[in-house]
Image 1 (tube, rainbow, N blue to C red):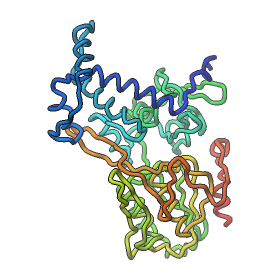
Image 2: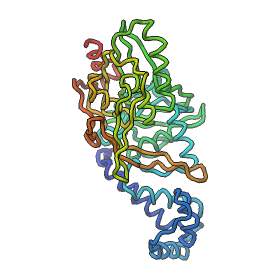
Image 3: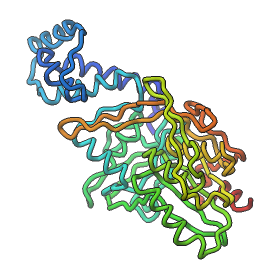
Image 4: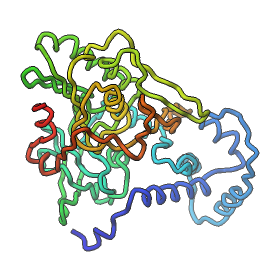
Length: 396
């Protein structure tokens, strides 16, 4: 391991500031400001709206760059950099502009179309992006990558200070291609040469333990609610299920509508979420009526530090209504909602449009949801296939 590894650690705030500064510089130097209002604003969905902003200082930067830069400038690349910089300058880690390629990859990932990769689930923990778990019978698991490993380099490029989306994009690629992954484990660097394979990553599945159903939801895709409802409708009565364990550990969220559909299995027509956006007016989202098949079934929800966003909407509503006992660790604390806006050129703007509150009016942003029964599952537990959280849930 390199001697200066510890000196390389950056906190999330520092990484965000650094990324924002870099992108904002792209904004300042990248755009032909003479054509700004005609070309740039429509890409952000603002149409032909004009602003009263004085862009003369930016004109000065651009003109100076054109006259002094010793090299060729790619106008399209500069405009894309400008868009990213403008959005990044909002200072919100959840708001992002994606070019056409990034948009395609993001939409595919959100819909479970992972393509070819190495089978790693990851999340930001303790200031680093770490491996949360490796998917069974996939390249990373076969090679010996372990939960808790810090993702340090990909193909020799340092990525320890990048976000999960950037790292995921670098790990994915064409089937059969190789990628070199370097992790930090303890005080040691380990490098693995992995061959990408197609990844099968369903959003929800069930296993059974006697009369207990263990529903694992890995993300909230457009069809997640339908998948779970079909499982409940077709299988639970036949198996005589009398207890449900809903496993939301490692679930980073997804569509709010999918969380609504899932909650409608326990909650019948009542408020599940309160959103408050730019207007300051509250918008209440309700569970669907007539489909609460699990309303009277004892339920336990498993959570950890990577249970986030739509997963927290589910856990928060079930807790507020007394429909479930929460077991595990405090959730991530993402109490804001993003809207995906399609822009011209197949690009995408993911923008924070509201804050959300549980039915009781509680904001979990930055705080998370504390479990009723707190039990830790360590990386060592995961790597040795021990699960004290699930064991506790099964014993209740």
